[in-house]
Image (cartoon, rainbow, N blue to C red; front, top):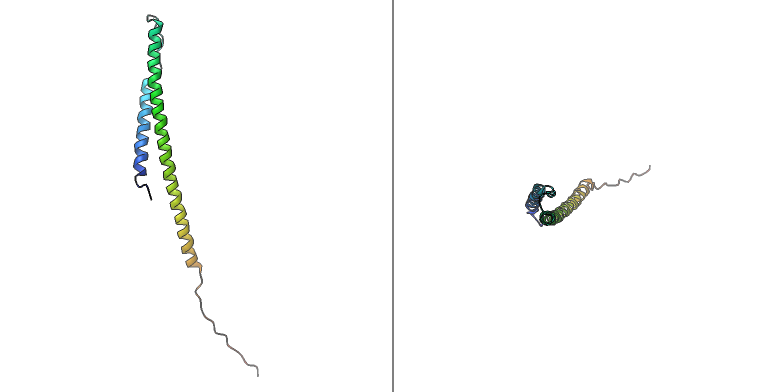
Length: 112
């Protein structure tokens, strides 16, 4: 196995995904317009929210990409191991199924 620490990498990436999703959920919905405030103040707050949400979504996408890459690498390793095991089983079954060679002597019978 080439990448022994793949499980740790996947665990760490999964934790980052969970944290990014939690941060994104904490942002909630964009602030609604408050009649007492000027329209530009509402636009500024909305823009700030959109910037934060965009940043968190970008982080989430990047982490999902790393997570996906790590899972693909781990799956590839599993398939390699599976193929190696198939070859071992084939070799062992061929050794088991080969009959032992016994030499039979032909006896000649003579007619009288």
